[in-house]
Length: 382
Image 1 (cartoon, rainbow, N blue to C red):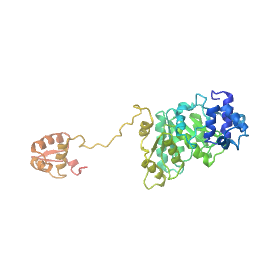
Image 2 (tube, rainbow, N blue to C red; image 1 turned 180 degrees about the vertical axis):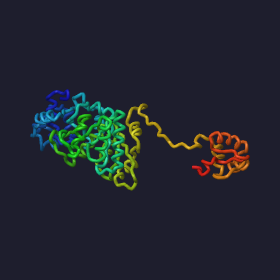
Image 3 (cartoon, rainbow, N blue to C red; image 1 turned 90 degrees about the vertical axis):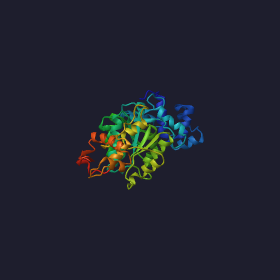
Image 4 (cartoon, rainbow, N blue to C red; image 1 turned 180 degrees about the horizontal axis):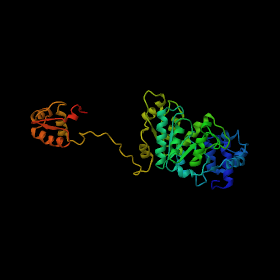
């Protein structure tokens, strides 16, 4: 199933059902004893008090074999830390955070043929409001498409709104994307995204801590957000209200030492208040995929090109040439002496500047005087 021993798979499948994530104390016991011994101790009830608190209600519910069989029937596999597919490097941040809320997963149910560790090697989370605006879904879709087209994996939660737009953007270019669910990996939630989640499973991965058949619950959405942050190098929040799950994902990313980015929106939009708060608190303001790629990509390689800027005919003039050009009246002709006084430079400097300006088509010489060309006479200095 995942390259790990069958006894390990059974033990971790049992633990995932018995200990509701995030299960920090159970995870520490597994680190000390190993998954098989820890599972046996929990079944007997021979565990320290904090572990008993996490597992007491379900320790007699051993559905590991049923869950593994149901997973296999649904095309789902159990990826465990003992498997080469486990994203060890991204998940090492959970140990650094060290809090109950940011405990690492005991294992993950995964649907799809791609390798989880490989997809997480260059991954970016894109999250945001369910009640997204047209602006937000457009930005999320563009980011998802551009990042996936550049080889980065787009990770999100398959929710309505920003999440769905990010997944669709990645899928539109045939790029990799990962959906992290708050229910079993064989379920489609929301139901309206059943086709989308199926497409993600075919070209990327669907990931969950919850066993096949598990139903979504409010607290599970908040819990799964730490996985979205943990699987990626950075999190982009496209739209978020003052209190939102997207902000919780951003807070988890920051606690895990990951980069937090936010897309600004209209200051009058309640849907962007959370983004603006994140930016004030130090999140990186991003407006283009290139900026996200540079911030989360390979050092010295994924650099953002400078955007093209509007050019003016006067770009590249030296300071004296600018003074002389600005001294020219919009609709009148003047001699070099008048221009020297108006510009505050010598007559010789005016003459030298006029040569360059004439070569650029910025001035015309008429009957001993200088004026702006007809097409330029109504232009005011910027």
